[in-house]
Image 1 (cartoon, rainbow, N blue to C red):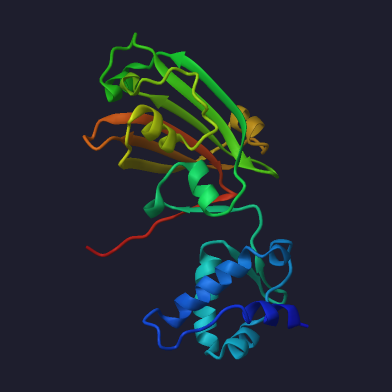
Image 2: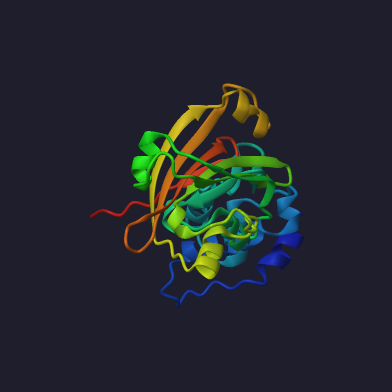
Length: 252
């Protein structure tokens, strides 16, 4: 039944002499298999006993690795059915902050833009104070609707400080922060984040292809340069059923 899976596992080795924990080595193997087209299409993984037998390790070690991937929502495990690759969900970690386009590319996920809108606008008093500019000073506003082939997942709204020098004619389909560094010598080093739960209003429900009142993950981000000066204020509205934030906390 699992002959093909056995063949795939034969491509990997478990190094019992390595300083890398066994469950971490198993996790690496599982991540590689998650990207395999057969399992992307819904084929079930073998059970923990079979995986442990083929790799010559304990069942508990396999379970520890799989539990981590289930916790990251990369795998789904259903009692009486089995374990398979989770579909239509993007997971990102706050400890691995980068532009969304670049991060998804690094993960091998085909992240696409459905719509990009650029305009010049003035800010309300509180936002102008955040940018340390007058309320009659215009800033560049960028809106992006992005997601997977199945549909949009996030609606971004960004405001950029005039000091950056953006004209509005840039190619915003490129990874944003990479473009800022290469074309405007603006390096981003700090992201101050605020994350809340909210509900989709009529506008968000329409653009994100969901129902009004369904849950939205609201993320506000202040992006700064090495001197602590604000570069961008960004608000992201994420479909809560297709996006997960992971946070790593270390005891101080």
